[in-house]
Length: 140
Image 1 (cartoon, rainbow, N blue to C red):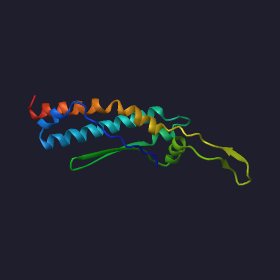
Image 2: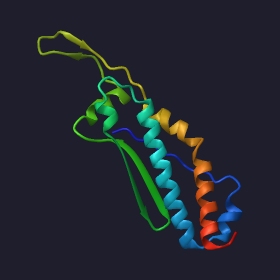
Image 3: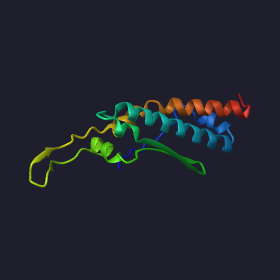
Image 4: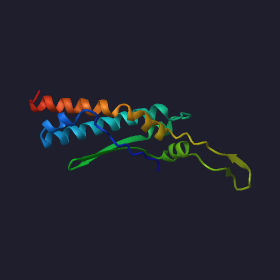
């Protein structure tokens, strides 16, 4: 299955983060990761090659959190998930039973390209959520 991990660096935010309570920080982190996952899903849907739309309709996002760690996952799902995987990773040369060539699918790597595009949005999303947490806690 295709997947990409991204590490978020909080440029200039440590001072603001130190002010927050642990609970508010966890909530801000969870919200930021959820919004980043939603943005990642929309970027994948925008960059996926469309022939019938079956692969685009099956792009899903989940967010899980435990303690202070939150993880968002964008992945292909549904009955046509194999189409999205083929388009992302490509296939080798394929043949019918009688030996006739049916071609190959060239890899598009749209999950990796979406992760690269998402990296520019991550600091903005994180800072917005930290600012919102500061306002919610009454420290600003």
